[in-house]
Length: 108
Image 1 (cartoon, rainbow, N blue to C red):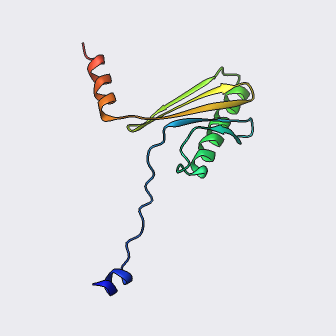
Image 2 (cartoon, one colour):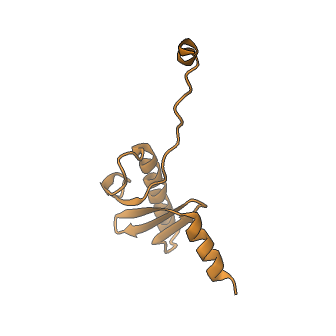
Image 3 (tube, rainbow, N blue to C red):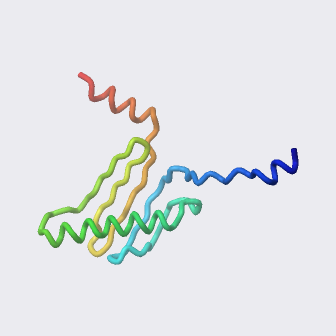
């Protein structure tokens, strides 16, 4: 059994815990401060910040007032607010209890 387990090692899953925290970025999207756990991949944080800053720049070029972006996934909520030349991004996991409570409140 020991030989088989060495030959057929299972790969480590690439799952990441849902983050809870925030980070601020400058106008280029470089991180200034972060309260995200160290286990959260910096590449994910950088990708988020690049997309957020690109969205704010595109809105500015189109002369559309945009100072907040909210993206709600089933398990995660992302909220980004423009701060002058940068932005602050909040990542908040959604629990099943929170989703149920929202649905109950919306019912008449």
